[in-house]
Length: 238
Image 1 (cartoon, rainbow, N blue to C red):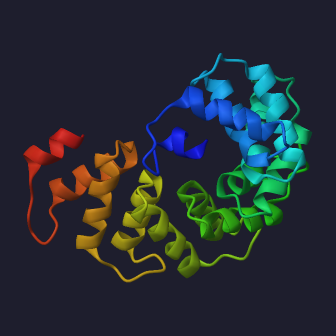
Image 2: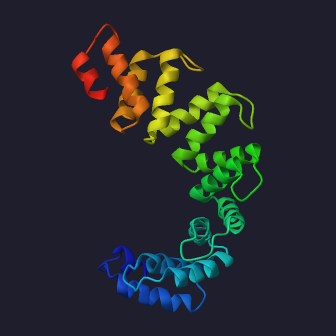
Image 3: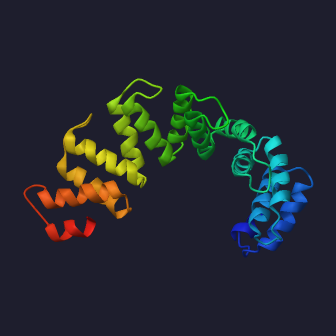
């Protein structure tokens, strides 16, 4: 089924045939097949769209412990997509998937812990899961964790650790992290001052459409970095 789904091992991409084999495996209780069939069914890819039935399949897969299904079903429970909203159950599933190393689930659970969405707010626990998601490569979690480290929200302030995660997020393309890290490089906040490196990260942020990055980059061009001004380029970003 996976070969027909992805067009691997010499097989052509054929979602209809992939779903046929996913369904056969699903009848035997295969958690991954249940999840993949649910995913295609939710989107109507190679099969008639049926979000309600997709959630039934996600639940069976989630109950069998498959982290991807736990996350996907939790997302639908959060938004009420084809199923009644249930934030408490969504958080239970986000946590189960997060504890298996699912980065997006860890981030979602951390956000809910941070804001008290369907669960008692707990910033210290939120930071634990932001870090789990960060260490799995989720750039939004990296930025959120760095922000809390900067402010001491639910943790001890740590500028060096904050900059570590800001840079990681920035290098993965997070425009907010790029702008924040650039500011730290400009001011020497927990890191050596480096105007040229700051300009680089502000430009990255600006190119990603971040308003703060655009403004900071324009200002740097207007005032000059290393004695070089470029008012024409600055006005493009203002």
